[in-house]
Length: 256
Length: 212
Image (tube, rainbow over all chains, first blue to last red; front, side):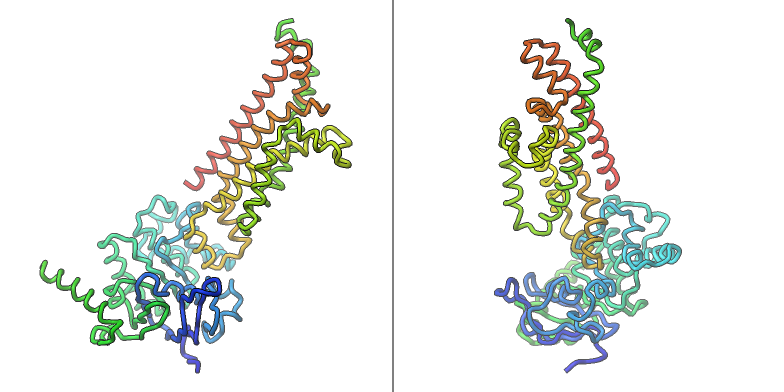
């Protein structure tokens, strides 16, 4: 059964590496249009693999992945990827491009007019909190980790994709910068109304940023929860996360 | 005869031999780049071939140059003219640094940069031309620089099979036991190697600067 309102849908998806080791098995999951779905799990749980199946950086061994109702096997892979924004922990900015050229990447590949590209770069840098005049001509090695992440996000948003994939984009940042950028992301997600799939191993981040949380463990989906449901859940796979989260909260409270 | 007198007396011959030497080195290097860079790119796409191709290249480097000239002699068309033979041998020697550095340079592009490029929807060709080659360019030029310096030196051996070049003076000086004649070949060859090294070094550094 397929859900036509879903932006992304996994139908019985299995992914094996080199035909033997199974990283994802029997995954059924649908991501609603406009929601932020957090993929939560430990390292090796298959969350990044799941993310990469969406823009076909990896191809599933069995089952179907649908993007906008169409199987990713049918999509022209270049079109599919330009239709989906992608932001990762290391940012992956081109070191030989300055900020504006990094951000302009996809619009340029899509052959937008120069004036439209320039206006969009300015707009999207503003959106992620980097004044154009100050940052446009800098190179990635002249930016802090937080600024690089913002540029990475701006690049992902540049061609205005309706779907955004984010793989622990704030994972390598110091706690203060991380808090700031998470907060801004919450604002951004309200204004932009994108469909976001967000990989994290951080429960607090999942609870704060997610409309729903998909919990993964050993390549299997353990359940999809609203944040409030997640906190109330008595599911065995959820409990360790809740206790870890409560423990961190307690430390916070006792400190205050 | 003192060296300056020898140079003055043999000015024209010296220019001719320098010209021949430049020709041998230039053509060999163009061929080595034309073959080596695509081969290096191929290896970055099919790493399974790496040990075979780099290994064969390595073996090539261990063959003494004089022996290689001799070994290539029986080849049809190539063996018919000394300069063809010399150019083939020099190209084979120059190939390894060019192939290896092209491969190393491309393989050295940060994994997240490559992943982001693919995820943004760059085609294989765009990935190569817009990301991999620009980022690998200084390493590739470093390989070309090494190869050029080697080739300028090895090209002096080409005179032994009659392909001309500055080696003519060196071999003649050896036969005549006249150091001045040897130096009349060795000094311009050394200057040529140093200038090539200097110019390619400048290019290499300018490439590093453009990506900070």
